[in-house]
Length: 102
Image (cartoon, rainbow, N blue to C red):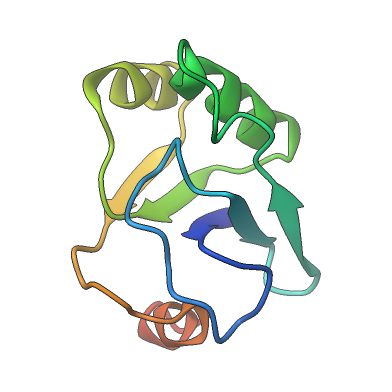
């Protein structure tokens, strides 16, 4: 199951470069896909561990995003979630899916 940090709940929306502050995540196993809301994107403290828990509960094992801070990186590694970083601004979710041939 992959997750892509997203700015909106549309495949035409840009990927959000901010992992923990992304308002949505597009999640897919290749057959079923959906967007999940990040309820922690506006919180001030301990965002990364809570977002990682949210993704773990969604059975995510790969995250595609732009930036991952040290707390998020450690939490993702601890939960065995592979990090794939893209630094392209304004790349759409659909373009990311084509890049990874998903």
